[in-house]
Image (cartoon, rainbow, N blue to C red):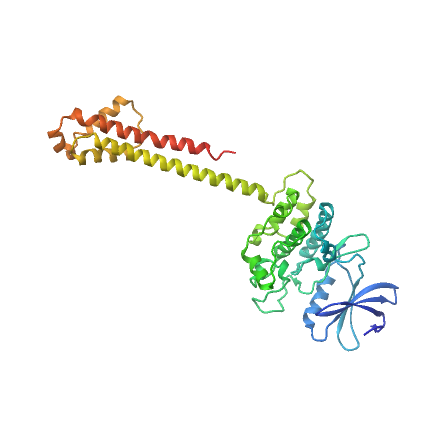
Length: 394
């Protein structure tokens, strides 16, 4: 279709590629400017193409590629005319690895603003990725290709359970065949942000289905695992956007804009604890748990030793000493003086269950062991609890 003219106005000059559609660099003969023409492919789905045109027509924002016109070619295929952007794609800029923090922040703000506008107009992109982020002559980032976008309230063009999107950037819910929401675009934004900062994707695999599985089930790595000097605030934003549950992410593009435009140094409200700090906290809690368990085990061991020691020095009547140890161990901590404890022990020897042993053994022989063993058992738990309370600090 070289050098042909669509609608008597757009001269097609150079094929730019495309799969579902044929994309051309063209000249607007009436206004004398370069434009991009997207023509429906011979075997492509017309309803999806038309929906992209309607989606693009509802949006007018400096961070979204503008649509100029919609028409139909002589052979009946529809076409769209877009502004021509000379700055290339984000995919091309990432070919050499990650970007500087300043450039990353600038692009992230532009993309977030474009998403905020789309979401405010009831539109979910569903396929945000670097090849769909273009740059104009001033370096401004613009979102393009709303080919699988979903308009609010519009029915889907595919059956339930169908996976839509690019595997490397797909959200967990889209990978499960669930309906995409603005939070789904936020997840894809997080994958793009991760790549700009780290120079690689959070998940890498040879097979698309394995990538989808990883996005659904595997915890994402921290950016600092690949780039230790990453700014903590950006790392926290990546962690928030890559949450598996959509409810744990910033809700939409507007929430992303709020986080990215908050003054430096001010705490944000929607972000989680930075991953490094979270790992340190989990480590401290784990150590504290181990120490607490060891202390508790030590307390039980000492209690058993104390109980066993009391029984060996008591009279040959085994039921008497066993009964006393159990009674004093389960009782609440004593609040009286040692003299009162001795009185309690004396009273215990007069219980009906101890009468046979008392009849054959003088009371003064059995009382000291029974008093000593329970007193040791009662004191130990108080020490353990007091120590455990102070461990998790810091």
